[in-house]
Image (cartoon, rainbow, N blue to C red; front, side, top):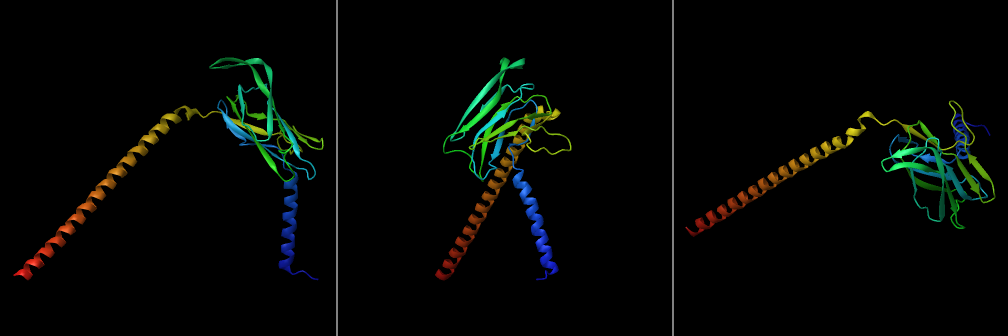
Length: 238
């Protein structure tokens, strides 16, 4: 059977779509979202873990938090069906905070699924943590280990390299310097709120004036109708 030009074009597009789809499925890996935050601030990040196997489930996730640029505060959001444990390491250089010096920081988090909560084939799970203040560095590399029910362990530990793609990339949180005008954001927000309040008040006053004008017009029309009726009655009486 000969293919028409239109049919050949359709087959080519389908083949291209398939070629793009398979690498995308194969490249699914553990990620951190969002992948950017501000130095010196606090943020909540989510580790998204897809299950890449067709015949096994993900039963454990381990996330390493580097201590060369440590984070003083790390807290976890509970995940139903999973237990979470943290490991703390002593810091070579304590972190100075408003509450004093911090000599130890969380260096590892391990989530383990119960019998009914493992990440099954074709599914994914998300794990939330809050951390800060974020260090003055350009990025945090969270090396991750994903354990499957068949005993296989996938090591997402490859650090990013400029111009190169890695087979098992580690989740990376990019950190940007704090903006110079960030300290004025509160006063700016207050000014905007005040302006918005003033506009709302003006709108309310305008609305009240319009309402009173409409009421006055209706009363005037009612008086005119009453006057006409009275005039007609007086004419009939005469």
